[in-house]
Length: 70
Image (cartoon, rainbow, N blue to C red; front, side):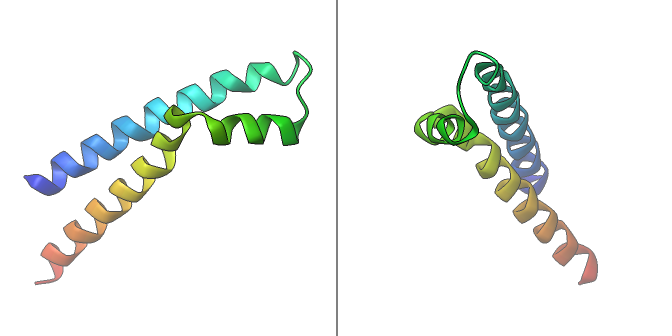
């Protein structure tokens, strides 16, 4: 049960972080260069949710695979 909860929390983090990052892509037509955009993304804490979510999903899947092989 904990593995599924970890998976769902990771999925929620990934969706939230990915949505915010895609939303910030609207700044590029407003005049930001790609370098400025990446520096801006690096400074926003909500954009860190996407990689944290991917790590949680990967860890949950790894734990699920271990339980099936035993």
